[in-house]
Length: 192
Image (tube, rainbow, N blue to C red):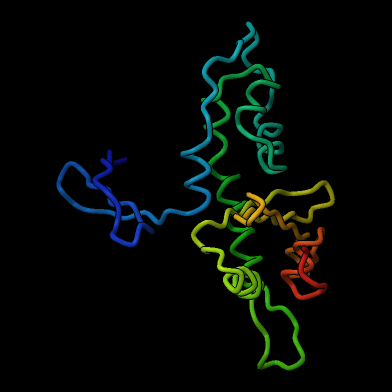
C-alpha cells in the first residue's frame, strides 16, 4: 500500500489531489461519503472491558448497514472505534453502491422519451429552487425487510430540509416516505 500526501484540490473544488513518495499525482472525488467520513467526530475514549469481543463482526456490520454511526456502535459494544472502522469499509461501499443504483432508477412518465432518472428528477426540482447541488448530502441504510432508505438533506430557507424514499433494489422501485420526497417526485404540491 502506498502512502499518499494531500497536496490540494482542483480549482472546481470537486476532487482532492494526492501525491505519493515518487511524485505521482492521484485525484479523489469529494463525495458525500468522503465528507461524512472526514467530518465525523472521532470517539476520543471508549471504555474497553476485559472481554474485548463484546460485539461480533456480523453485529458491527449489521448496525453499520442499518445506518448507525461508528461512535454509537463503539459505545454500545464497549469496543474501540478502531475495531469498528476495520469492518466499516465494505459496508460503507455497499451503502454508496445502493445510492448509485437508486440514482439510476428510471421514473415512469407519460412516454418513454420523458423518462428521467431519480437523481435527475430530484436535483432538477432543487436547482429550480436555487439549491446548489454540491450542498446536497445523500445517505442510505438498510431496513429489516431488506429494502433501503434513501435520505437527502439539503439547505433551504429554514435551515435544512430532508426528503426520504424507500428503495427496493430487486424491483428497482422508489417510493417517497415523506412530504418532501413526494414533492420532489412531483406527486404533490410544494411544501410551504
